[in-house]
Length: 326
Ligand code: MF3
Ligand code: CO
Ligand code: CO
Image 1 (tube, helix red, strand yellow):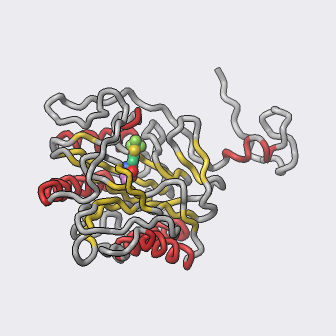
Image 2: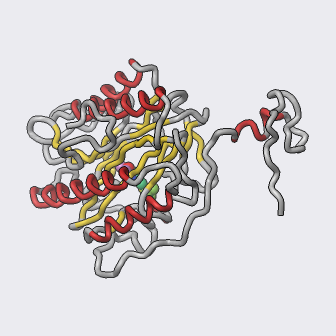
Image 3: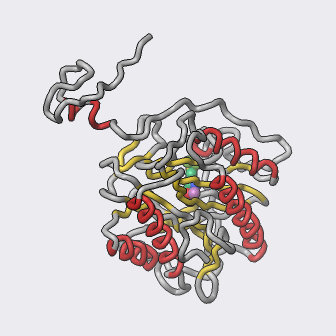
């Protein structure tokens, strides 16, 4: 078998594509240039039977039940533990990011780090998701599936870790640069983390959830960046996702009032261009419609009497792009 390779001199946008399809170059191979290409997904990793599994682990089916939005002190204590663990696993996974490392190798690492800590990696078989972590490169907005693609110098990659331990989930993510990255990507990552913290700072008992989206959207707009609308933050606890939705843009209909004891994620996805997305054929990988880069940071937060406690927080930055991290 031979593979058709791209010639060194490319046609003009309206000329025939170099591949011989007869279509205009702009309607054919031009659209995939410089875009992330899917690699090969490795066989499923096993979790030892001694580790407590969430209800979907074997079937892949997620059956939701009615879980109180306000958590008991005992559940909150368990969520602190799961949150701190997810943060640590994310930090260690971030340290493994370098040119030449495959996203599958990051999956293997996250899988093993969870198991070592007696945690089940929550993504594994969640609605059939095939891996233990999400790795979203460059224009991939979220839910990128780890595969044989090697990280390349200049890429950006979001790693989204969720640990299920003590019967509850802790969910956090961060975007990392691979080697040296360009200034625009650096700024995108920096402002996206700021957006996440602006959202966290808007958490206040007695106020509607829409305050969070307003704070995030205002900050993104100030920097002329887009806010993805199709994916939102979520209630979390004994279930990975509960019915609470946290929009990352302002919508007055996001009117649920924050109450002490509520737990949810804030996880804005911010883009260099359009907020609109497209799905890959794998039905998981969401990419920006214009192919421009996008970044994300996520924390699991608890509403307190006075504001927010960041259950996946802690001292020090996770990514190294963290002027506001606390
Ligand atoms: N961790 C993601 C979130 O922030 C969810 C991943 S679901 C999976 O909500 F199935 F893709 F793993
Ligand atoms: Co989440
Ligand atoms: Co997540």
